[in-house]
Amino acid sequence: MESKHHITRLKQDIDAWNQWRKINGEPISLVRAQLQSAKLRRASLSSIDLSEANLKQADLRRAFMCDSRLIGADLSEADLSRASLTGADLRKANFTKASLKWACFIGADLRDTNLNGADLTGADLTDANLTGANLTGANLTGVDLTGASLVGTQAHNTNFQGAILTGACLENWKIDKTTQLSELICDYLYLQSGKNGRCPSSGSLSLGEITQLLQKILLPMEQFSKQETAN
Image 1: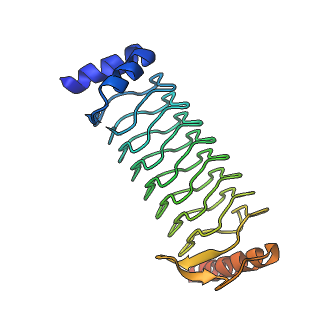
Image 2: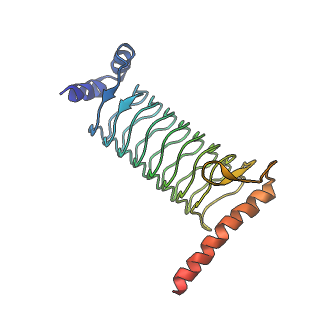
Image 3: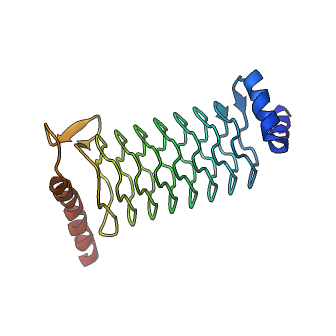
């Protein structure tokens, strides 16, 4: 009953909700909350448990969701432009075709998330964990992935144009010819998790070296694909 009361309060008046949250900042559970298409722009949702919540097509522009839990939540087609999700737990969340432009995901846990077709233009994913995430068809133009984990990330037909990849881990990164990797900014990479396999071992990569390195990552994948087709 308490969660239903919170949901009613949240839907009725965002300003009143935010003021109430300032006074009552204790953790709140809204697990499995039904908030599809809800108008939650600038809502204060930090440190709230929204695991498995239905936030499909919700308006979460500039929402404050730092340290929130959205494990398994449905945020497909939602608008989280410029939302703050620093330190949020987003494991297995569904962001299919969501707008995440200029959102802040610093240190967020995005393991096994579905970001198929999502627009992350200009988003800050510094130190974010994207292990096993699906980025197929996503737009990551100008994204900051400094220190991020892209271990096992699916990135076919993904646009990384102008992305910052310095210190990112690309172990078992799944890319192909449709992955756009132009104008990358990258001083060094890790080819193994745990900050192992630094490339280069010292110093910084030049633009040409970045291209050559990514071609080395891509070539074995293409050869494996050809072998599978032949068999």
